[in-house]
Image: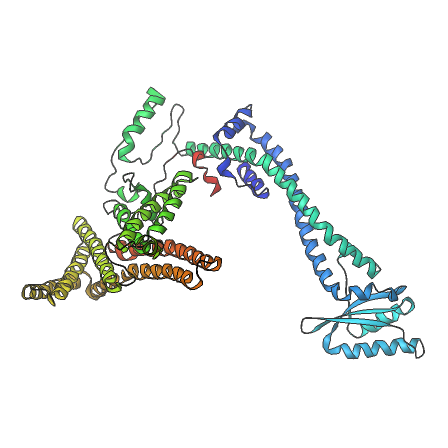
Length: 584
């Protein structure tokens, strides 16, 4: 309950600056406690209740003022059309009232009111009125009559279905002029009062936010330790903790525990039994160079043991594909600046990993930019006479598309081969036959296509037919009709890699369009501005498009051939203070 109160008060204060909360402030908060937390809980709870009532009072007053301001603003808007009529000196010493009437009955109501007033004054009628429509059916009528005739006018209007307009209760004055003045005054004063409350809350948050957050973390750690202790099978002399630990860090963990606790701890470890493997959490372990790309796996459930971790392949192919789509030296330099900032200045591990991934994209974009001869489109060619090392993709569309499909074929075949190997390791005949059949069919298609022009057509054509028949047999054996559909799907997967060429081509053309505006408008401010805006748009689309589509090629076309995301997340037992996970 104490933990919940602390979190609730932080939410009332709108304090969420967990990143600025230091270990030093938490340590100082703990030092101020004269007794352990479990002994001070009741005292802290009482103090927090008083503080919470103060904060709740601020919040309640602010909510009340916001509601009142909304009603005052609405009333002021309604009276806007009658303001000059109400303040007209000619209406002095007369009674002014406002009435809601049905628009379709307006003529009847006004005739009845006029007849009633004339009969009272024996043929003379001294009154005036103004109307304003609200919506399709409602009419707001402002009537001005002598004070003596006000009761008669009110009876007549009520008798014809009129409803008296009322100001907010806070401005419910007898005189309409006073009502208008009250509404104007409150309309101007309420925002200042709300601003003052916000300033008080901001000051309170600045002073008390870090203190309450530090106390919250300490209370949360105390609660977590108590929960762990309850699950540790305690006796009078010892308690037992058990769990999972990765084999590659066991030696270091064991040495640390023995150094820290000496003979007070007994450490026993064993490998999981065959029945326990389904419960073992997955702890991914990759070299430092590819570890940032585990971010792609974290978006899915982790792989199960004895399957395959695709992080290393993603670490190579993702920046390769994304760089091929961007393919511009100028954009590569911009991506490098962004990646360096995130890598060095990133406040969280995720931001640093994104920076490292973007660094790989920048490197490949730079290399592909050299191959395509692009520097902010054709600016490199215009200024530095830069020539492509391979092809100019805006003119060599078919070669680039053929290259993209070839990349897709290699990528998909690698995925199918991994699935085939997994089928062999797991002795899964269905998986083995289906992936093996897919591989043979794709190889058969490549052989048949090559035989159309290759000088070895007499060898490639019959070889392709044999591979095709063997592939069909394996596909039917592995998955029946579903296997044949899977084979057709693999062909579609390969063709979908055309998006690498298509996105890159659109980016290159858009960059060249920017230069065309300079040609048309000259080196004018307008021409340079339009070219700059087009490059900014193209740069954003290049990063977003290359990243999303490269990720899709991995998730669907590549990992879909072998990935099994049925593992369990590995969440090691530790103090969570360092990551400040509460901000999540």
